[in-house]
Amino acid sequence: MTSTAVVVGNPKPQSRTLAAAEHLARELTGGEPDLVVDLAAVGAELLDWKSPSVGALVEQVGAANLVIVASPTYKATYTGLLKLFLDRFAGGTGLRGVAVPLMLGAGPGHALAAELHLRPLLTELGGTVPGRALYVLDSQYDDPSAYKDWLDDTLPAVTGLLAGLPA
Image (cartoon, rainbow, N blue to C red; front, side, top):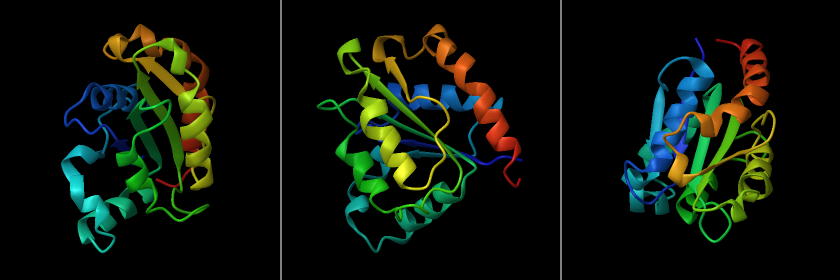
């Protein structure tokens, strides 16, 4: 069984970004994610570097075979909330599975944000990022066709990588 984690850096709880990330997890695995980390619910505890609950989340996310890391686009990049969480991961070894960068944005002008900012970070943290990052217009977050081309291109690579990982 593949463990799947979703990490969402939207400061608004239960956001469209969360819905998009959960949808993507279902499309990639055929099931619900095993772990959903809505960082808005973690809040100020992210600032406490000794927090056992945040430490446990970092361990669980790091050990997942598949991690969807999602953020709205803020100032042409991911949110500070997501950065606070990802700063906890050791470079090169923090993520040990497949990592999928997902960003939502208001317009196509920031479509490269996920590829330019989030994808390299996930790679630096040890994640294997198959294919290109995914950018979805937030007005289309609930439209399956917004994900179709990316899924057509990337799903085979994700499936192949997950098949090679220990269950």
